[in-house]
Image 1 (spheres, rainbow, N blue to C red):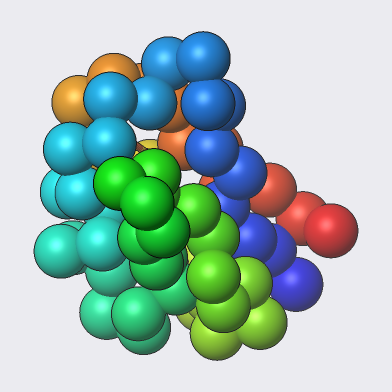
Image 2: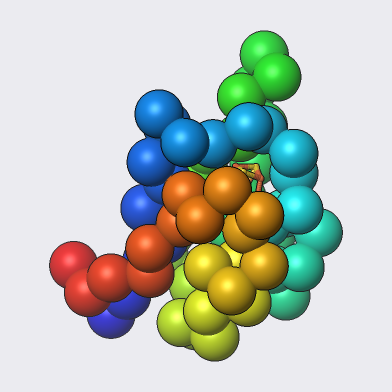
Length: 61
Ligand code: SF4
Ligand code: SF4
């Protein structure tokens, strides 16, 4: 199983990851993007590849 990890120091909260994710893994709370449903991740890496800040790493857990 893999899931995305967000480097909060790099993330600009642009929400692109949430738009490209086919599984609705990302959520948002008080303007901060976070990994809401890691169990839904299919490790397609669309989020990692499309994050303009290179803030996402999809890793095994
Ligand atoms: S795409 Fe990258 S910078 Fe944008 S909200 Fe997602 S993790 Fe943050
Ligand atoms: S790897 Fe794919 S399914 Fe998993 S969070 Fe990123 S975009 Fe969504």
